[in-house]
Length: 272
Image 1 (tube, rainbow, N blue to C red):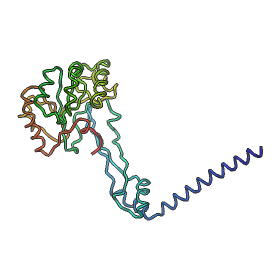
Image 2 (image 1 turned 180 degrees about the vertical axis):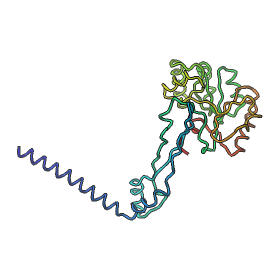
Image 3 (image 1 turned 90 degrees about the vertical axis):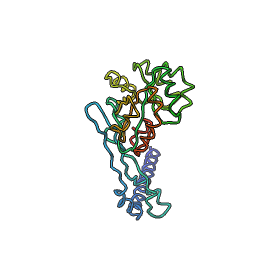
Image 4 (image 1 turned 30 degrees about the vertical axis):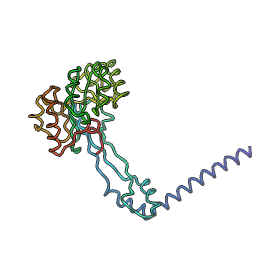
């Protein structure tokens, strides 16, 4: 019995020693001029969160804010022996309605602070796919929503491109599972659906996928591209021979407006 009491007492003493030592270190650190300076300066480097814009059944993603991680910044500067803002370490603060938690709304555009747009095509047969492959540079960051049959029949062709591939067509659970597996195993993460059908948004939401509702739908891309063109737009271009042949002019026109063309995943990220 005495041995048990001694052991408990020893463990208690050790735990107290660790706790006391940690408290002493914390007090010392708090009095360090570097720590004091970090706390004084932290608000200068704070970036406010841009909250998502939600209206009815649509959402425009927000953008993460950032705050100084005081402890990590202090540890980073301690060896240097002085405060230096380039040694500050930050932690991100997500919007209160982050896309990672919202799947039952249509994404109608990206955040305009991005200074970028995304271009989308749909493909439901070999002719439509070849129309794109033959006329649009394979290094362009465009997004193709494609049905299962066309995708499975043309894997090698599509793998030679930089296009971003997403599911299209019949958004039933079985078909979506087949498409998602094919896309994830060969291309990119299958993150998006494309439709304005309420039944579809429910199915895609159940699969933790976001549903895109384009900002602009262009039937004649060359003449319509400047209409309501602004940062954050998701531009669906009708897949016809004229639009794909003239896509280089569309591409250049977007860049002349000071905008980049990026894939949907990049446009909709909640980071700058």
